[in-house]
Image (cartoon, rainbow, N blue to C red):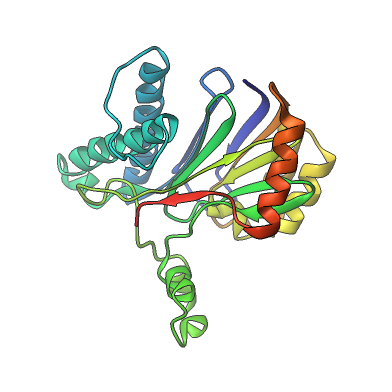
Length: 277
């Protein structure tokens, strides 16, 4: 069992007329989400809200005992539920996008964290990052689904010379097609670990090292406000959303598991990442 202290905040920013971001924070269901919508005529706001609401409702039903088959045999039961909830939300958003001309082409990023009894599962579609702070160091858990990021990951020549528009051009999003391929990983969690989920309205303005500095000094609620203020002070061209969750306690033999984790990290520096490409 894991005990978490969490907080979340969303802000319209300095230049936008509306807020197309949505987030969800619930220490009861141990589910946390940030969705950054896209599409004209407030369709982005619709897409992000539908995504958050449908994943929330799906996971609540699962926590209440809903019996479903695991779609992927290489994922744990908890990871399968988060994976399935994202597929469910994608279908709902896609169907709505087909229902009205004003919703055509709408979509959203989605970054989420879900806790099992002893582990955390992180999953994302799009470019809203998920960071983990462990032993004072911050690392990116999510996979960035943009043209530039994927070209760099594949070592394509000239990828670093691409224009700025390719840095923000998504290759995956919720609701833009009948199917979606989320990136998902499951990892051991320890007392004191902190996770940060945010929209690119924050990550484009505040460096990971700066986020880490704030997280070390402040509790989640105050940290969220400070980070949003930093992004606004630096222009705030986009909507800004951040969720911070800190692990207060992990029941069980955490000391032995932490030693094992350090030994594994010495050989394999990345967390266990199970990805469906």
